[in-house]
Image (cartoon, rainbow, N blue to C red; front, side, top):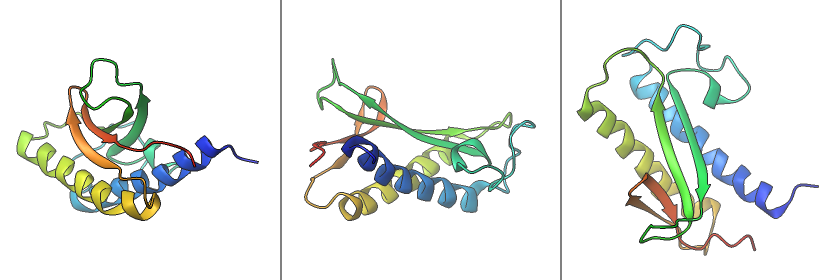
Length: 129
């Protein structure tokens, strides 16, 4: 039986996979993925295929004005030069999806996306119940 933490992170993974799919649809044909990287859908986990690696990692938030949370990283897996404005557009898409989907996946938790020293971060009520 999965733990409360595993269930919480599984809900978050649904959102991360949605971000990955949206970014692949928007940018996947514009850049070459690294040669060792399978095409989108080439693995059971979208994080390991295609042009993007979208992941979140828990941080205790020491030194952060927002405290604990999940740092969300959108990594472009390419040797191509990705213009800064394109990277910013990708981050904006990810942030938009997070802002829309967090309340749906975690009702009543008052989670928000903030920009911290480490980048985009999910902050708020991270309680498991």
